[in-house]
Length: 207
Image (cartoon, rainbow, N blue to C red; front, side, top):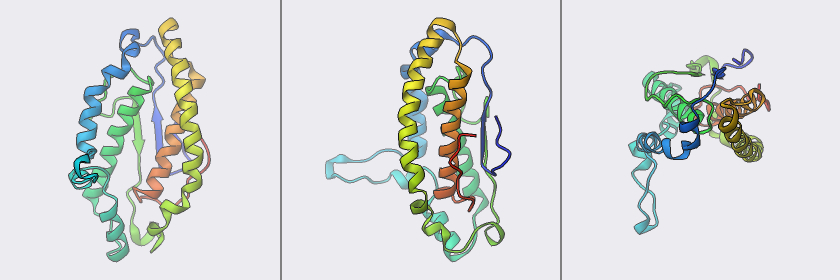
């Protein structure tokens, strides 16, 4: 399931075995502790008393604006910023895969487990065009629209898969491939528009 035609890749090991029915049934509850940790690391939060969000972007999350400015004015992508973005993305993918029933292994904060994410570390002077990071988010708008519809499809597929696991203990392989494909598509868009690690426009493809 590894993509060989794009520098950004996501692959999940298909669980060719019976999954844990108990943890699958109560997955929305089981995922809460690790989801809270992910939110804290990502800096998700706000203060509604003044109808403003604050602190969140400074506390954590993907390093986007500093990277954008560094690329524009210094033509440089600090390695430790890339490492942070890569590892946070991997963590997000593990939590997402667990929530979507693609694995019954509880998400690790640091181990790869069955979710394999690969992003290229760019050399801005060779791999990235000057000024393009300013408009990538805009150029990716068609992908946002398609992914919104695909997200709805993933919701329905996950519900069907939940029943399949409940009665058979297995995640239907075609459904598994579809959900992973949507996650892969979203990862490529994120890598292009916000992680800023590639100038290769994301393909409209699940493969």
